[in-house]
Every structure is written in C-alpha cells, then in structure tokens.
Length: 136
Image 1 (cartoon, rainbow, N blue to C red):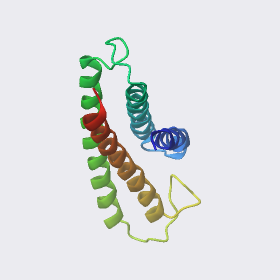
Image 2: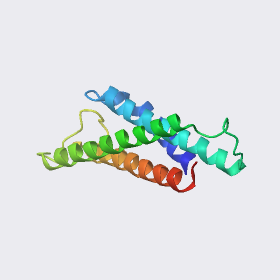
Image 3: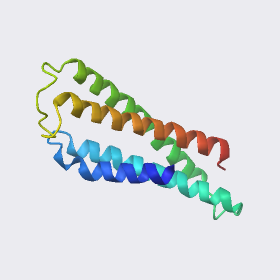
Image 4: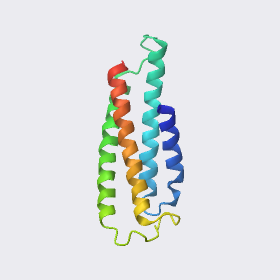
C-alpha cells in the first residue's frame, strides 16, 4: 500500500504543473506526502527483517521528525479539504470549464483537489498508526 501511495503522490506532484495558482503548494504537499510514505516504508522493511541493532532502526530524532511531518501534513490536509469544500459551495455554474484543467469543469477540478487532500490525510493516518503499532 505504501508503494502505491508513494507512486500516486509522485504522479500527483508531477501533474500539478497545470495548476496556475497553487503549483508550488500542491507540489510541496504531494512531495512531502511521498517522503512520509517512503520513511514509513523503510521502517516497515526494517521491522520485517527483525534487525534490532541501533544503527538499523529509526532514531528518536527521525521518529520525532516523522511524527512532526505527519502532524503538519494532517493539518495541511484538513485545511485543504476545508478550502476545497468552501470552493465547491461557491461554484456559480457547475458546468464552467476549469482554469487549471481545461478537460474538467470547475466543480470536477475542485473535487480532484479535495480527493488529493483526502488521500493525503488517509495516508498520514495509516502510516502513523502503522509506525505507532508496529514501529520501534
């Protein structure tokens, strides 16, 4: 699941170039989510090997960074979901073509943004629970 999420976040970051207003923020959001899933995957692989040497486990500082990044991305996801929900309610004509994505309507584009933020939040929750339950 982590590999699939990592691939989805990398692809999502790559296709954000069509977003005129929020290119940097969405690329950063998806890239940080990809980093979070990679760190969690590394921890999962370490645990599968059952190697308990201090050099192979995530250090306390790395775990602190992992949880800090998780909190940041969780809050960021919730904010993006709220912004998208607000934008969805303020769409005047649901059939209007999107500025960012000409092949989608404005309502569909906002739905994609909300879906990406929801996937980010789901990924954060999944990986935090995984590391908390099965990590060091």
